[in-house]
Length: 589
Image (cartoon, rainbow, N blue to C red):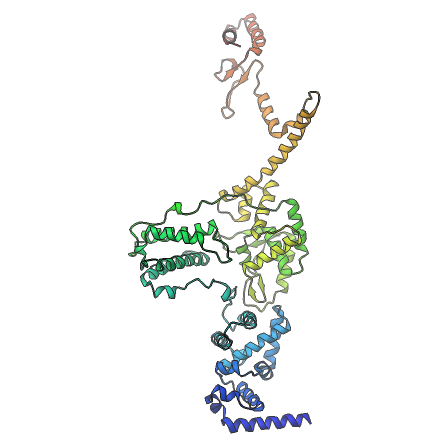
């Protein structure tokens, strides 16, 4: 009986569709409002025909119709739907998330008029943008239920080869709302913007993209400040010292992206960018340049030079024990790599799946080109090698991205690394720990255990030893240990009721070396004042050497040596000793 009822509904749907629209051409020519007012069975047949015939549908109807497009596309392409589900599961999406992603993919396919497996990257991007904008327009705001599935769908479709590379962050969180774009600034100051963008284009040819991005942000902020001045500055040649001073005030008072005031480091970076900008365009002989460079080196705030923050041995043990207990394998891998290698956060994010290489009998980790524009090899600890092998084994091999660390098919952002480190720190009850502290911790542990500065510099990827010398200051802990060991013995001397003699070992190794050196240079009748770097090839002419000096306590020895020389008829030696005795007698005590 139910099957007869369904068959009757289908017949009524077909008849109603033909009677109302004739065919799909007539249906497409009808208004969205008229199409939505038809009976349910007519709407169902129209959706079925659209999917089977792959007819593109306008965005307004797809958004407003309420049709269950995911079911229609799944019924039409069951094998493609199964493959999609398996791929989403391998990236870590649950069934509920996969269903929502499929629902939006179905709408994208309806707008593009094609099957899920036949979407090209261009078609996907165009239809996805239209769907996103259409939903926002209908609802009047950007719903979270829209952003989350589309964010995951972008990554999945990229690995399928049907979408461009996804952003690391969501677009609406990457930049504050008050940041202006170049196109808005160009309408108000075309010559000013043209000079700045010409400069940025040249920087892009020789600098890292991340550096160019920072320059871009600084110049956009500065251009917006100049155009808002009274009167507005229309070109770079009009920039004067007063504009730099007012911009410094703005930097010192404006809040940052997280609501806090800009740090000295950020303000100094911005002013450094401007100084470099004016210096370079002057050197490059641009026509749009001021008469003199308006930014001075003294404009940059003087920065403090604190010692690097690191975890001491007890804290490091607690931290690593907590890291091994983290339930998420990605968290464990992130923390272990940072702690065992001393890598920078950016270097960690740039690791690729082929980063582990074997050299001889050992395994090494190849770091990507990063902050210092160089790469290096870091020896791999066996535990870290096992973690990396386990991670690479479980990583879906069909992914298009060569990056080692991905989550749900998307490159992880820097904040994901921060959260992993903080999870281990919270579990160890250490408070706030930043990923760079693990780098400082490894270097401090290494130098306090005898590793040379050259080896530490090679391990950390420092360009020169001046960057590594800061860890030598931390190594004063070794001096402190010896100091307190000696102090304890000295305190026992002060606390005694009767004077006591300190044991020989109380002097410490440095003082024992000094005492041995002094004893070695003590002569039988005086001392040798010759510097250590000036060697002496003689053994019997010390008393006539200009470096020799003696004191009254050695007079008996010198008198005996004088008498011995006189008895043996050695007049030369006797005269030397006579002169020494006369000098001692003439010298006041």
